[in-house]
Length: 270
Image (cartoon, rainbow, N blue to C red; front, side, top):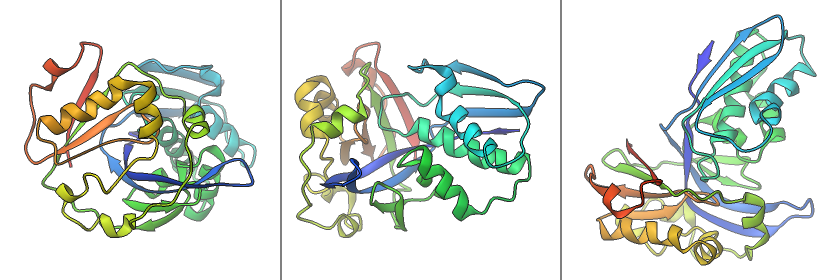
């Protein structure tokens, strides 16, 4: 059985406070994006995990996909499986690729072995794997609070826009980004702002991680500047970076000349 995990962008990201459990409360809008990985799982006589495509740092055996399998195997009678994950979503980008892979693994195993796990229980399993994993079970635009697991459906109308993603060869540590952010509330309601025309988002819908990341990695700030100079209606860093996205009213070509050859550029229709 094969599935194609999606990615996400954050439309706004505010860190509102430090929690007693060591995590942070946040406010953001998760928006699904059709930049996808490929995940295939089949029942097997022995456990095997293979990966292809883009490189992923860390021990493959501790990949979130493997952790998702182990999480369900602890509670259900499921056999060994062969897993093949083809990475197309860049890592360390703020696009949620690892979390999406894990959530997709939970749903795939549920279907493959007919475990009949309810959606509510899948969301709980997903939260054990990562704060934004539940969003990828949900799969629709949401206003998220708490650690990202408290979700409220929100309408975001972007059908006439093209999305440009620019990923420099920089891996941003999410833990490092959180350690260097100063929590504070927003002066404006993100849920209210999302209803404004996109060109009014600039300067109002913010990503609080940008201050730290742009200071340490000026080249990430430069991406945002270039996107605006080339006509983006709105541009923002996604998550804790390092990917920056721009929303354009028309298909934008020729951006490669503004960036080094080792930058990854993706074009998607919303």
